[in-house]
Amino acid sequence: MPCASRGIFFRTITIMRVKKLTNLDVRGKRVFIRADLNVPQDDAGNIVEDTRIRASIPSIQYCLDHGAAVMVTSHLGRPTEGEVSADDTLMPVAVRLGQLLGKPVHLVPDWVDGGFEVAPGEIVLLENCRCNKGEKKDNEELARKMAALCDIYVNDAFGTAHRAEATTHGMARFAPVACAGMLMGAEIDALSKATENPARPLVAIVGGAKVSTKLTILKTLAEKVDQLIVGGGIANTFLLASGKRIGESLAEPELVKEAQAIMDMMKERGAEVPLPTDVVVADEVSALARANRIPVDEVAPHDRILDVGPKSAVRLADIIAHAGTIVWNGPVGVFEHNQFAGGTKMLASAIAHSEAFTIAGGGDTLAAIAKFNIAQDVGYISTGGGAFLEFMEGKKLPAIAALEERYNG
Image (cartoon, rainbow, N blue to C red):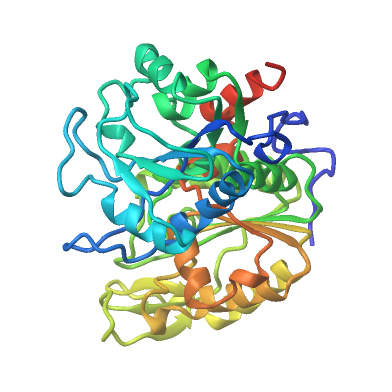
């Protein structure tokens, strides 16, 4: 297997220094936790998936167990600032949070100016922070008001770390003490392990519909990884760049040159973008579509490539089996339909059996992990989507940068 230089890392190696919640004395203190409780709901407002709420529990429980007066807030959806509609309220989250904690969680509607009570050992949930005017623009006056509510500010919302908003960035600047919660700290540690000095070979899996949405991360990875596995519509664009016919498959012909440049970049380093030699095609994307497994050179004009074929899946599994570190963002096929799930299922199985450190992130990736029941076999599952990708790209995330600046003060 070709291997890139072991001296090349994602970023210049620097130790991220942030205060950690578990290193602070919170007894008797007013602790403000910015969590990520942005959970999906059905039309009736019922929470349909509560992973993010569950992920927030350790930091909250730690503070309650150690005698802190706990205030928690989060965004939910995309509300209009200054208004709280029935779709925007955190009331369903308060109910679920109370069930998980085994104690009542009171929802405070108008909280920026204080005026509410919370005693040591108690918790209140502060209404949707994005309903406050100035939140999205990181308004300094708003951030100072909110920071004055607490003795300790805790950012435990990695999923919003790439956004500079009043509760994710501004508060960290003005609170008496600013630290990372247990979830945020774990994210920083895991992502740093995967990017700063990864065990080689370093294999990245990037799937998704469009090259354009992940072009920056693909270019960054092409400079660093030993194998870059692409899937979905992204792989179709790369197949097009390699001269293959893809029928009516989802692709971006205007980005063929970009895809070719990425493959050339990898080749120059002795690395590789392993493209499928066989594929699964159909004439439509549906649960009833008939799947046909064919060599990639036999794709017909009206075929749609919806998964990698079994031979290609075996090859990808072998690459994963020999990896030292795996970064996974996106499936390799339309895995929601079982007839197009074979490639992603084999990839997931290979990851589950690999001894490599694996970090996975992104909504579709988490859905695949859940479908194939391998969560317990993945080294770290990131709760961030955009934040996960931007960290991997080597970008400085505003929320983490603010915590770093407060490390000594």
